[in-house]
Image (cartoon, rainbow, N blue to C red):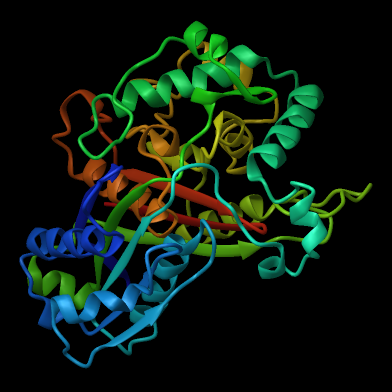
Length: 380
């Protein structure tokens, strides 16, 4: 089966954009990706796209041109972007197509996400009691992790401090005001142990990637960035995931662990080969837990790694170099593709203050309800 390359990437700034629809932002990202690749919309043989709150992704087609090409809408929670990319990856791997586009966009209301219990096979009382509120779930899961592995509130603040600092030097980020760890700790408590700056916010934005077979990429002179591995995995019976109505005594591995291991195996690489990483940071605790689940450290080692600045730009493993969800916000359809976009531009170089010097292999991982994880490893 043929290798798959990322030959174009585009993004619309994340944040709040009054007067612009989610569809507007998705269209912008697609046009930027086409411009980046030096191609036209009519060159696309297929598309996969997702949006959670801004309408069907294929509503973008009349704006770009009705060419009759295959386009499939994708919906898979916060892993929508990763799932759309995996779909395109296998479309090319199968030999059916040579080139196509992956797009995600969204425009969420202000305030917390408001998922409906019935959509996850849960009774209405579960939502009425407040259990669908993800801020509570992530807070409780992080409390347990902190207790079991010796993680302090200061370490949670250090994650947010780093990500807000990275966002301040990123064009497509939303939050551009750096904050020190103490200010983050002193901010209003939202859901113990998280203060308000430790959470990401539902947001707006769009991102798009153009992918191609090795043959097509070589024809176009765009065979610099290859997808080494792409996976999506779901939860096991004993894993502790979003919307779980109970916690089993016997625990099993998370979908993040299995997606990560599968991607490493597919790529023929390991955690030590990764030069830059974008991992899910719905809140500070998520980044900490995912550091271990993705194989970058052992549980509990995060306390010292964060204190030593190892995940900052210039550290051993720069993580969430564009500020992640904490600085960019989370438009569900676009968030996973934003991560890959950031890795693409990191591998190309020339990012100034946020450039990871010598980056050759980049890693991205998203996590979503009700227990889904997608991983993508790209490199030269």
